[in-house]
Amino acid sequence: MASKRIKRFISEILVQLDLRSVYCQNSYDWITKGWMARPLAKESAEFVSGTIFSDVTPGDAASKFSGSPSLLSDLISRANTTQQLTYIKTKVNQVKKLTETPDKLCTKAVKSYTLTVCQIEPVVVVVVVVEVVVVVVVDVIVVVVVVVVAAAIVLVVVVVIVVVVVVEVVHVVVLLVVVVVVVVVVVFVIVVVVGVVVLVLVLIVVIVVAAVV
Image (tube, rainbow, N blue to C red):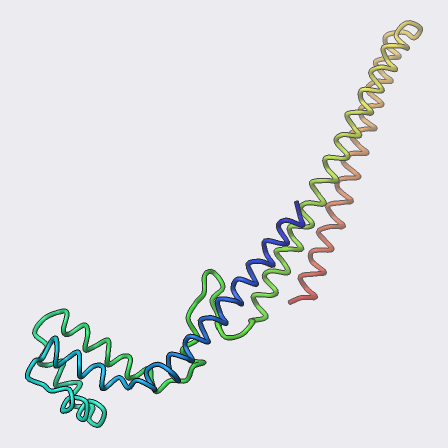
């Protein structure tokens, strides 16, 4: 049970690291090989002249787009539909992103492990280690309790058999006293054993968590 859960935790870590690597590489390529190699100005100018603003030529728009930020405001002011406005604003945001480094673009959250995508955060490792320790401790507690309970049941069955055999020779009152004493002893042993095991395991968890943190 514990080994399966530990494998699941480890596989989740590997998935996160793989997604981080892929995302960061894509972000770097997006800057160095994508928009840098194929300037945003040219693409936007072709879109604007061919789809939204037919009176603007690609060459004219490209020269202004790459050299004058005022053209961005001009295009936004001339947009007369929601689609046009959304497209232009998206391009403006992409232009701003070109000035950022790949590391800044790699701060997107991946699944439940947020923090920084481009590196392994110690907090993630601590969380997973604590989770694994807790799972192992819980599994050990469950196994110990099951074993103790099973032993107690077997002991009670043996006691009952002995009582049934002895009933033929010993007085009923004596038998009842013996049964009561045996049951009390068994319950006391179970409580003591389980209590000691739980206490030891809790101390182990506290020590491990304190050491990791």
